[in-house]
Image (cartoon, rainbow, N blue to C red):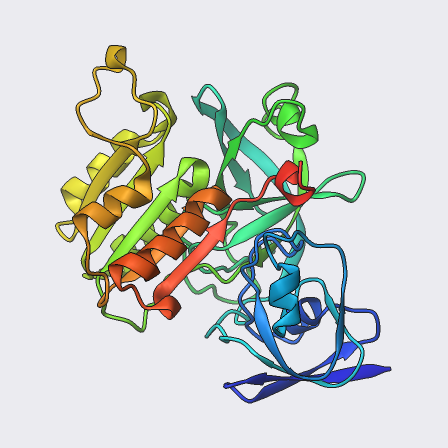
Length: 353
């Protein structure tokens, strides 16, 4: 048995097999619904149920409160339809453009760029043409079936055309992993993992990527390793010669946490339209830091009190993303539909711990 889901205002429809979630079926059908964690923790997929009935699986109240549910809002990532439904959601152009692939990947290099941040490069199979939007993420599939999500930190490279039956050149992806002590996966990454180890990955996922059909100036807003997909977007702009005005704000606790500070400075020096503003929330006098301090989204508010003509791309800790969305819309006139976000939810975040 299947139920039909119609998404307004786009007017697209797809079928959901019994006991499947609306989001899982949308991804399978190549329908671009917004989403982040796929786990009921971030609220990125929140949509309005116009007609029909759904049952929600486990989710966090900060992603969908009982009052919001009473008001007709749903989380497609954990909502199972009980009837045909009509939902109201922003569809994402091109989100279903690239197929989701499951493949082995070889660790080609591990570089500790901060005490708790590892820059990992993965070599993908030579016979797989892995394509993605800058800003999207992959999931590692661990031996017990659990998953861990990390954004690509490099722009996708278009392979040159091949002749005959020769396979396309193998691709590689860069990921930035923060060590969470006691974390099943990152303890291994920072401990026993060696180059050439084989991991299983699946992707691409996510609706966080640059809207190239806009000419608006934009704020790229990152906290911690939320810098990874922001870096991919900057690389994409460089590769495609995108000239839009960009202000990059990167918030971290200490100077050591700005693990690619020199890379960001170099990008700003070579791209005239890019300005880089690092912000430290816990700068110590002994750091000799003379730059900006405080909360990173408040630095944006101080510099850009009127964001009515801008787009904002925010990525990092859920508390930063939520505060930025709330305050930039309410106090800086940012249009609600010009805020694009990917909240980095850890396993502890997902389980409320």
